[in-house]
Image (tube, rainbow, N blue to C red; front, side):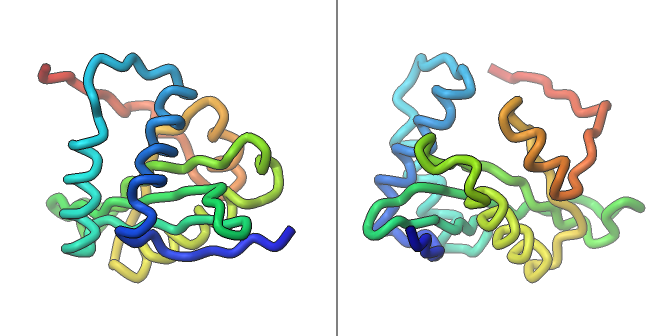
Length: 151
């Protein structure tokens, strides 16, 4: 098995979105809306302006792993003087291909992209399944992360 890694383009976007939905379902998300149109609009807009990048893992023509990182900016702070932050998302590997270092390779590539963009930090809300991958990579928990839902 030879895995090939390539950047996401609009050509793969429908498959990428299908895999994102699978990931959300696997993580236990409740589906009460059709998320596909909003995802498509988001990815097209942010791929276009360079604030979202993704690497895909292929086995032949089949996408077997995805990654994504969105670049956001907030006022600089001591822990991140650039104010630029990478928000990881869409880290997903087909169940038949797990435990083969595919996710680690995808993570390495998007973290490299974050460095190139000038990010001072990368953040993720990790699924239970992903905690070991991120911990081994060097991510540390932030116990004060909180969220307030507006709708």
